[in-house]
Each structure stands twice: as structure tokens, then as C-alpha cells.
Amino acid sequence: MSPDPVPPGEGVSCDIPGCSEASHRSLATAEARKAFPTLGETRRTHLCKAHYKEWKKSTRKERELERLGR
Ligand SMILES: [Zn+2]
Image (tube, rainbow, N blue to C red; front, side, top):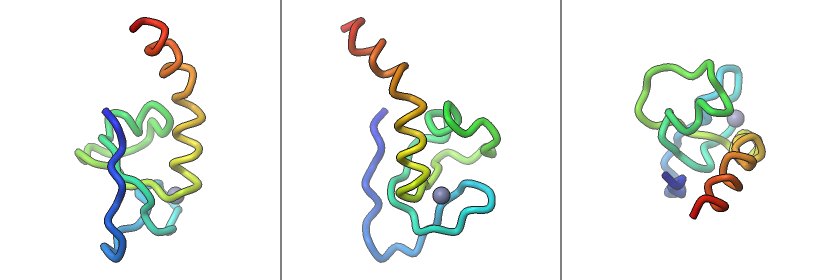
């Protein structure tokens, strides 16, 4: 599943607890949980730029394996 760009001006903020940055990307919570296991049961999770970067970093290994399997 790939992250969707968030339309500007939507006023959505990052879903990571304690973070109030503006949403940069939204992704399926199941995906986001790979990096942030404390997330709740919502369907979509909004991530700010910094947390999206962090998520990408921590899922990189897995995605490399995926690519090798194709
Ligand atoms: Zn954030």
C-alpha cells in the first residue's frame, strides 16, 4: 500500500501522540504501525513530514526485501 499525498489546506494534523505538526501523508494505520506500534484502531493515519520520514526509514528494510522477492 502506498501513502497518499494529503491535499493542502485540509487542516489535518499528525496522528502520532504528542505531535501537532501538519499532516504530510496519510497511510493505512496497519502500515504506519510497523513503525509506530502504539497507534490506535483508526483506518488511516496522518503523518507529518518528520514522522513520515521516520516511518519510511523503519520500513525500508522490509521494502527492500519485498523488492528482492519480485
Ligand atoms: Zn508527527
